[in-house]
Image (cartoon, rainbow, N blue to C red):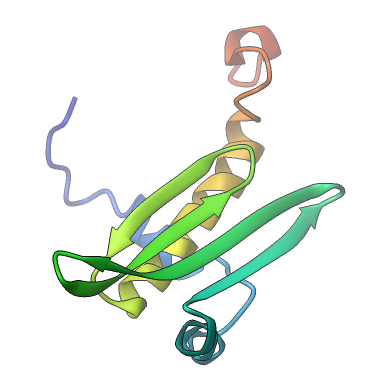
Length: 117
């Protein structure tokens, strides 16, 4: 179940293909000024993803908290802004991919939807 499969590059591809509605300079400027960057984007009719990267203190060091929310909620702490942006892209890609492949968590099960049949 938790074997190491280094040939599977699904998540590393999502980091590169994932989307956030701002470039790294804009995000850095907002964090320097306000302590966080946040945005919300509609990617389907009435379907929004909320993004937030906040500067936090962890073990007496500056870290960055990532929050990406839609019907799923993903959060992590990163030691650098570059890594926080990568994780934001990953979570954004995961949310849209999961919607198109398996639907929202609030739906009935895949077996009831017959998605994989």
